[in-house]
Image 1 (cartoon, one colour):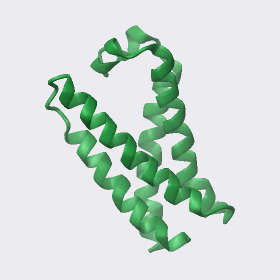
Image 2: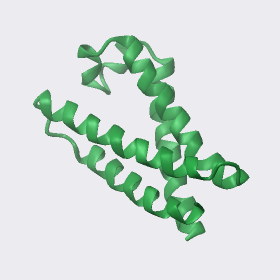
Image 3: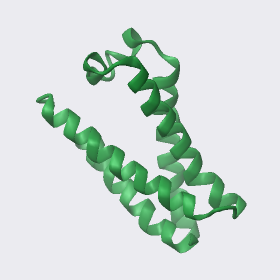
Length: 120
């Protein structure tokens, strides 16, 4: 179970570190081609989402590695489930039916949350 968690959480961590880092570092114009939703979202909100993604990714990996507050891994995974539910709703409300990545991330975060229960 530990190996499965490490693989799934590691992949999820890498994705969210990259995506969150882009939201933190890139300008509105640089994000627009990849993320059409930034047109209707204030930049401080985009930066806050990016920060939440980076912190959540850290929360998936560090607590199990250090054995300090392992419940944070479960909290981070649940946070990503909630984030992807919201992201899917935003895409659908904008008429964007390309939600395969969101569904994949939702399922991956759900599996990660289930595997994280082994740490508690």
